[in-house]
Image (cartoon, rainbow, N blue to C red; front, side, top):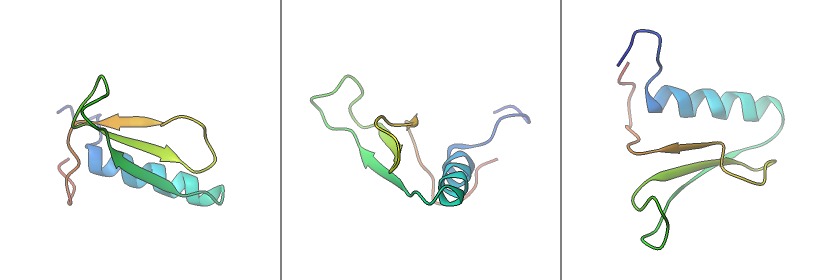
Length: 64
């Protein structure tokens, strides 16, 4: 990973902070087998119609 790139954990936490400023929440769901990306995670803000980000792996702690 590049020094200029945040890990998935930090990216999700940043999404949650920005959503909270707007009064929204972030919901993370694992995509099922009937999708093009089985096993991936989708992160969607409550005030948006589509997921804002997709993750292959989400760690509990920072991996930067």
